[in-house]
Image (cartoon, rainbow, N blue to C red; front, side, top):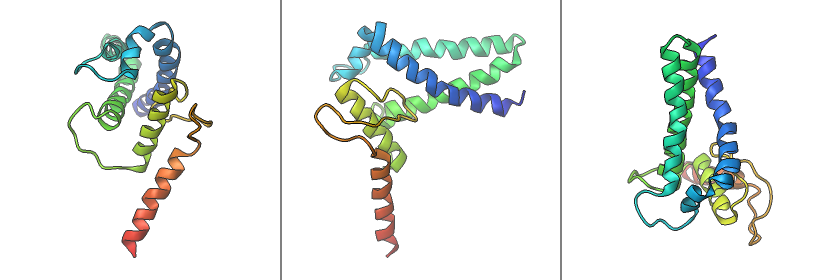
Length: 164
C-alpha cells in the first residue's frame, strides 16, 4: 500500500482514537490522572502528563513491528506519531502555553482554544482536539455554537481593515 495513504490515514483515524481515549478513558476509569489537567497547575508536571507516555508506547510498538518486517505498521506508526506531535503542539504549546513559545493568533487555533476552554468549563463535549465539533450551550449559558465562524470573521475583518 502507498506509504502516504497509510500516514495520512493513520493521522486522520487518530482524531477518533483521541476522542475515544479522552471521552472514555480520561473522563472514565482514568479520571484520577486526568483530573490534574482540569485543576489549576501546581507544578511543571501533572499526573495527566502520564497519558502521552502511555500513548506514545503505541507508536514505539508500531515502529518496532514495522522494523521487524511488517512494513505497513512502520508507516502507520509515522502517522500516529505525526498526530501526537500535532496534538502536543496544539494542546501544550498553543492552548495551555506550557512551553515558552510565542504564537501568532490564527483563526483555526483560536477555534481549538475556544473549544478546549468550553470543555474545561463543562467537563463535557468537545473531547476531540484537532476537530472538536460540538453544538450546544455551556452550563453558564454561553454559546459555543460557532467558535470557528467567530474567529474566521474576526480575522477576515482585520484583513479587510488592513487592505483599505
